[in-house]
Length: 555
Image 1 (cartoon, one colour):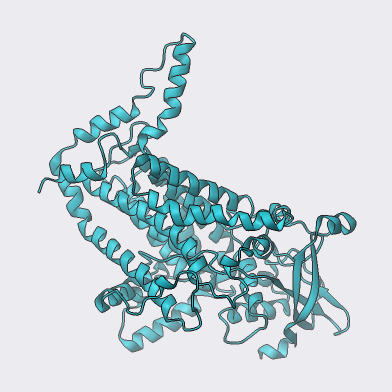
Image 2 (image 1 turned 90 degrees about the vertical axis):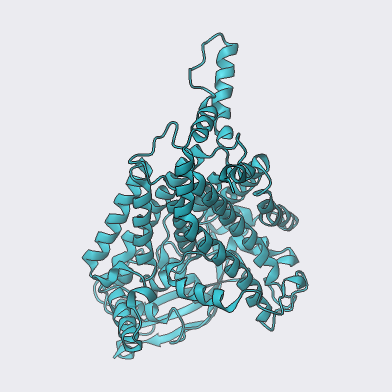
């Protein structure tokens, strides 16, 4: 069967994506530059030799286990840190990732460099413990695999102007790029309804989610304080545009270039609103990059055509190449050798099939998993509760074996909404009578400190404090117990690593003899309260998160 008619059905002759591919690849490199730099400045304190969760200890423990089971260490925990987990090697891995990111942005050997970035970041994610367990970390890895497959491997440098057209296999990968952004947006909307129960206070269909969101998000911004002051009716009404963007626009992705552009524009608007009101690391930037494949080349040339038209009206001669980019790309695509197109498709056939199968498995596994949680009797989407797992057992097993490589994942951002804001306040004392507070960097502690922007950097300890506070009380079996225990012990010793996560040290001369952590419920002040007190926050004591302890507790 000839390949050309098949491709023309998916990609009409006037729909080329060479410019979008170039921007998409460079955009992924830009996101990597942010993500790796953000991790690098924290890595030694988090997973270094003296860090909160040393990678060396983790690898030793899991390595011994897999050796006993006769299983491959690398297959179960794929990471370059098996070579060495020293602080110097971790820094070297980050430096390598930064160099590769710069090369991708510049367009040099994009395919190999992107593959190298995927290996580097996978190595960091798989040794980052709870600090590298965020959905955008997995999304970046999934996006990179698609970028590797769509990158032009036959060029040494990808040109900024007139970049090479997509080959046959690359065009099919382009569809997977559309599926990736559509999946991300649709699942983000679907989980808000699929996990709903009338008994849960964070029930999204109750239309009150945004009355809590701005105050209860992990690291609020000063713009979130202002958004929180908006009237309740407006907060409730703004849910409907969000649902429209997340649940309806994803289907437009597959209905032609113009509707695809409309869907991408809606996604961009939503991401920009989240970006200017919250600190969600590089997630918003990554999603914006994922929207680039939705834009056909002819839409990128519209501004140049407009400029050429204006110059013509003013009597100035338009530039020779204005408005011709789409035509040049079309001619280049038509002249592409059929043998090369078929080779491109053959090389990508296996990974394309695998990724498509994994996406199918992940999507229906998520549906089935929700159905099996007995206390969720969903009154909104009862049809999503599957009685039988639709995925074959062999597909589930394949997904399980490949899961350490994070090739494909499901997403559920903002699945449920917390309706209050517990905060852990650590206090130290030399006598058990007078207590002084530690101010965690970037976390709401001081009432008069304005919430600040920190994204795209992600202070991962501040984020984990938010998750730990939701547990309401310290528990030795919590996933946050290991790093918190090391942090508390470090504060009782005035350890520089532990103190690096705080704005100041209230005990500069000698460490405290006693430490405790109390739980407070924080709320944004009203406009009137802030005018009178100057505070952005108000709080009330809710109890002890961790009773008073001394160094003897760690002996």
